[in-house]
Image (cartoon, rainbow, N blue to C red):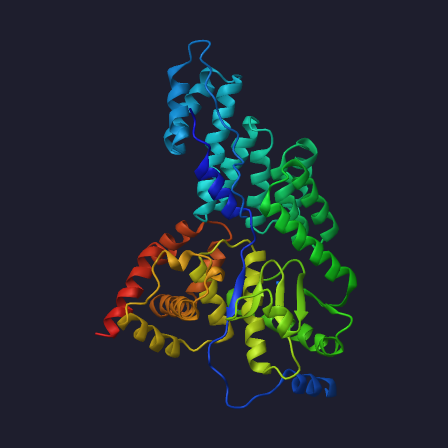
Length: 451
């Protein structure tokens, strides 16, 4: 009996959602405070989890003898050993190219390899395997849906939308196509369509909790977009409630600050925005209702910022630059480990590396440095402020350490190379080592400094 594809289902649940990047505010307060209100005045004078498997289950027929290669391949599929199953299914395809069972097994193998590649950050490889799974056409839409998700991961949003539209038309009973389509419509600002797709996914799979979450989110975004007041600039659309006069008065300043921030990111990292990003401005109390206590801004496909008239303008602009960095990297299709994304964002905002390292030295003495596995997690689920602080500090220190070891241009060179290659290839080619080894060396360096 085949097991129920638990690994593939769990992996898809990780890939189905939009990553959330939050700005962590440490107690680094400047001596002189220039409020947002004051800065505005000066200028006026002159952001899935699904536990259900999306993999159709292979089943064995006992009514007639079966080619032993098919049975062996299905045994490997049962244990998610896709690389071992690959030569067997490709050998079967040569001898039995029209066999539905062989083609279905091949689809499963190629889709499994696509998901494995994507979880490792190798989205171009994932795209190739997903295309092969589609060519087999044995899974009734699952590979087509995942192909669209990989296009989204690569930042190819318009292409993903066209592909997912075709997938939904071709496989109208496949809920995954509509599910991935929610995110595509969401990122393109088509909230009414995102709501429609979420409703359709739920009609096909009523108990899908992740789709229900997306439906509620899309409805909220649609209402905000429909009823809010907007300020449009070259790269951003700022939206705030029409009922909040304070936010309305600050929005033009925020819009200008956003454009300055994206220019800085382009100059420093060599990446830019090709499509506008929605920025939702809200009072601090409203923002904190949906964010961890330690967050002062977040990017989840939209930039979300708490704004008050007496907010320190320098701190706010640093937060804004942090979230803009996340937005640019995400929209450019970079699939970075959490520590590198947060390290780059902190480096762009000008965080104090020396201060971070002093805190890390204390953490090292207490045996509280974040583990290598923790550095790759989504930190938004953490509630411990000290744990979050150590992770952010480690990310900043490691990012700066790579620059210190390889030169100031190395991070820009890495991002430039990632336009054509995957992270593993780029790390080996430009740095001579995998990022995991660099993280170990940096950790050893930190621990040695406190001895």
